[in-house]
Length: 78
Image (cartoon, one colour):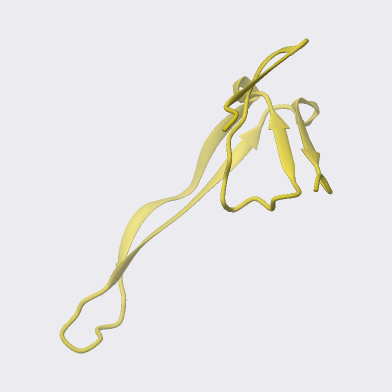
């Protein structure tokens, strides 16, 4: 498995994510991106089923880019 790619522009980290389509790739500079919390983590109880009690963790998080020119999306790679 490849974790880094050394190019003429420096070292590039390669990260795999199961939620991204196999034929897409995203490129961005980490110092130009930050994680933003839209809704904080909360725990909500769900409907009771028999003797069991169930719940879920709810949150909404997004990635914010300072400059759009510092990111790219590649499609149709396969």
